[in-house]
Image (cartoon, rainbow, N blue to C red; front, side, top):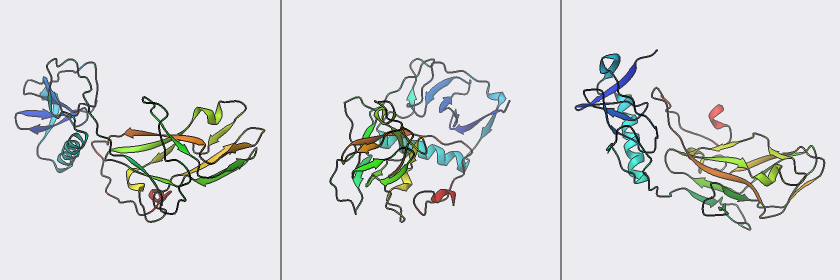
Length: 241
């Protein structure tokens, strides 16, 4: 089993993998990111860990988490009254924003949620479309999304796309991922596109402003040994070129 790697910070020791902060006795005294949750926080034996000093890689991770905490307006380095239980404490300030692309006629609604506690934002079709049986259709939603740091937008089908009536229509890539740096890229302005395939036996009709798919904002983390430095230079598929 690989040894746990801790970063020495003053009198304490920080675990970048879990966010736990230990004292000199190996007991958890704080947590650096309260959005992480665990029902049980284990004490450790410092003698069984590798202790790292002022390492640039881990310092960058720490600085990124500090920025995340500041942007999200959540409590940072939270002292644990009960070190065996850690619960989420958050008051996120929305910064994500849907926008029409510059060339859109804007004759449809921007993505919106149906209810107060809906997770997904319904995307509306900008045009009338008919997808015949066995046919695949690619079209633009004429919308882009500006995302806050450490966030991506997941595009998934609405239940009506494949479950209501005799509908058998699906996204060809099953799930779409919109990265933060896709916004306003030089190739296509960050426009969100769909490819739908009709597996059914009847034409699938979409009217302008019909809700077709939904987008869910998701947070993501990175590995402690992550070294990604490349910048996006284009639109769809550009990171695989």
